[in-house]
Every structure is written in structure tokens, then in C-alpha cells.
Image (cartoon, rainbow, N blue to C red; front, side):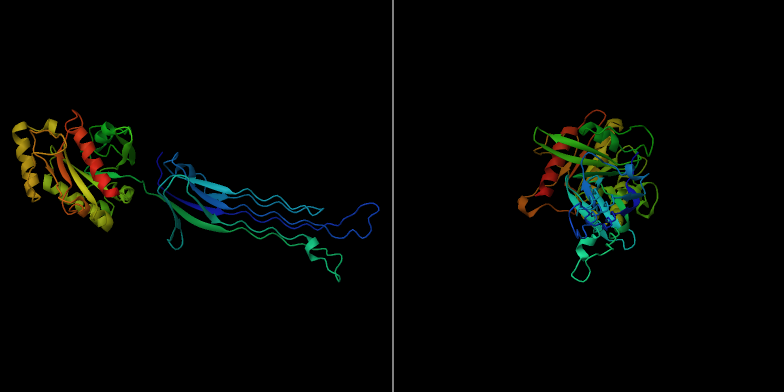
Length: 366
């Protein structure tokens, strides 16, 4: 079960109580106090781990506590400190204060560890309170209480490329074709109910991560459909691939304008992300109408179809790829990096799409 938001109460351990004890041995006169200190309470730590990708394991743990310190003992023996509690979270998890809404930690990298709550100090034993005027102290300190805070864990997936499109446009089919992800695929809307991540390999040494989220509809940023719940999973994504269905009853212009508006309305940062466009399901569109639809769409965006490229696109179909004389100046983010017609079912232009996306990701990383 995929869970991306939970509310928790976390508490560090209480310090152990100091000991009241006196040295009593045969032939030892006036032994004096020798009560040991209490042990320190356990701390609360957060650790980022690539081996988990959901927060579902917190659903039945509403209160997470670290161990308390043990009381001190005689013969100046300090009590055992409480073990620290390490809370494992997936990459992309934000730890948020429930009261103020402040983001306390943003767990991004595998192995990242952050100390959250300090355990209480152990109390001092009575040996610390002896003096020339008080040679037999009969009291010791209690241990300090641990800290308790209410927090919220929010998971925002980390990916290089985010797939954005209306329901049933082929996002799941594409990510299953180009990556190791295996989402559910069916011929009805909202097949995808949870976000999916897939690693797209480019050769032996290069790769990028692609995120598939449930379909977006008009008004998604206001709560319609499943969009607002999962749009945040592409919030960290710097590159978007808008998927436009050539065989949909929706007009191509309506699709791209609605999707761009929903993304920009949800996040200003996403609205200025670099993006590309994939025109899907070319295999089920009438060949006589296909070129007209693709050409008119490219021209509608104020672009000119391109017939030559370093990528091996299908020469029979029009496409567009942005050219830049100087890569150090970057690309025009107002325009798509490329527009390419594809079909995941028959692998039409899928390999060129992989390399084109990697090229865009590489430029974005630089």
C-alpha cells in the first residue's frame, strides 16, 4: 500500500534517576555516599534509506518513543543509557512541525541522518552532593524528561522526468516500456492510482529516473480527480514530459493548455520547468490524418516541423526539436525542448525518445 503522508508523535527517552547509596564494607569505616548517576535517555534520529519508498509502515505507529535511561546503582555505577531510536524514511521525505508547518528536515540522499530530539539527561547520584557539612546526603536528582513533538511526514518523490497527461493517454505503458517499472495497465481512465518510479538506463553507465503520476484533469490543482494529491510528487522534478493523446476526443490544443495551466497553478516552480511533449498513440490514428494533426499542433505552438536531427526519429512523421547554437546559454524554457510522435505499443520512436529525454536531463543537471 502506498502512503505519502502521515502524522506522528515522537518522544525521546527520559533520563534515569540518580541513585542514593552508601559504601558498606567490613573493616571500612565511614564509607560515605557512592550512588551512581542515571543513564541518558535515547535520542530520536531520522535516516534516509533508498530501500523504502512509502510511509505505509508508520500507519500503525502513531507514537514513536526512544528508550528511557536506566537508574544509577551503588558503587558509583552509572545507569545504562537508552538506545537511540532511528526512524527510517524514504528519499524525498519532509519532516514538518504540525503546529507551525515549518519544514524541519528534508531527507534527500541515501544514508542522510539527522538528529531530531535529544534524550533527557540522567540524574546525579548522591555521591555528587557530599560536602564537609553534609557527609551523608540522602537525596539524588531525578532524570530529565524527554522531549515530545507532533510532526507530519510528507513524501515527495525524487525523479529526473515527470510524466504529465490526462487519464489513459499511455503514461503507464511508456514507463513500463522504457524503464524497470511495472505499473498496472488497462484501457480505462485512472488505472494508475499511486505514483510509480522507474529507472531508465542509457547504455551501461548512464540513467535517469522517471515518475508516473495519476492522470490530471481540468481543476486538478483545486482538488478535482486525483491530481492535487499526487501533483506534489513531481514538484521536485526539473523536467516534465507532457503526454498528448492524438486519438483522444479532447482537442490537442485543449490538452496541452489545460495541463500546463494545472501544473503552473499548482506550483510556480513547476510552471517554469523545462519540458518536452510526446504525442501518443500514433498507431491507431488514420495515416491520412496523422501528419495533418501533428503539423497543425506544432504550428499552433508557433514552431516549425524539423526533418533532421542527431536522434533517429521516424522520418515519415513530422516532429520538432529545439536547436541552440551555444549550449552554455541553455534552451528557451518557454518552448518545448522537443515534440515527438510515439507509440509505446509498437515501439515507434521510443528509443529516440529515451535519448532525447536523457539529453534534456543532462542539460538540466549541468
